[in-house]
Amino acid sequence: MIRAYGGTARLAIHASETEILIPKSIFKVVTPGSFVGALYDTVNKHGGIMEDESYGNDGDLAATVVCKTEVLEGIQISLKDATRGEIRFLTDDEGGEK
Image (cartoon, rainbow, N blue to C red):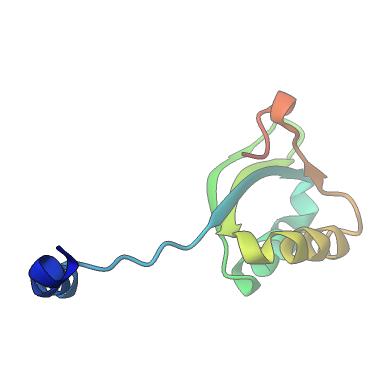
């Protein structure tokens, strides 16, 4: 059967579309307003994007960060450094990391 359908299978495979899937990670952060620029710069430098940004009454920025999974650890370390440890990564219970 392999010989009988091999050519047809090969044509079907060549005619099909290919999609490249890149694993992504999502996490939520809260940082004092004085570190907003550092947050944006660091996320952009690692190729991430910020979503669902909102400011609290105290001026803190809460945001969702989406990045490639392969840079997750590096981006979180860089965010801690850029904010001098002031950033908070929210847990699942707080509506955080997915």
